[in-house]
Image (cartoon, rainbow, N blue to C red; front, side, top):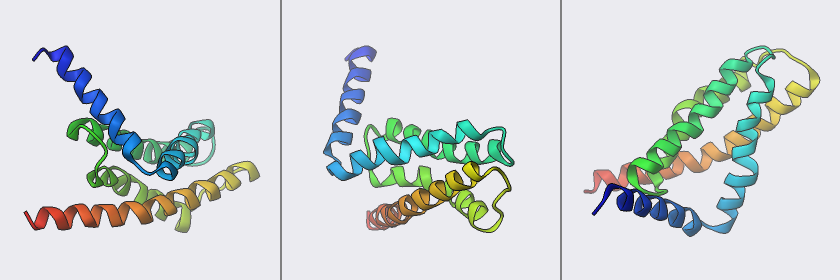
Length: 135
């Protein structure tokens, strides 16, 4: 099998694994979770804006790397969010930076959305770890 064919097959599996997710998860990822975390780039000039963007975006980047490595979405992909978003949530909860009213409203939305995501992610990671322990 050629490398090009192998890569095309991997991309097709990743795409199919995304569409195999429940519709509400697809909508959550595409229209809420992804856009809100990417919107951190609009606040780089705010206090701790670079740190917040780095943590938010690294969660997405690590997850994409996991999805590519395993050839699709799996419970392991949750680890990509858990690692950087846990400190992000702690910062937004206990050491929230100052900033404009718009920035504060955005940070609240980012916090709520990522806490919801982490609730699912922690459970998914727990399930994945438990399945690995049983093998």
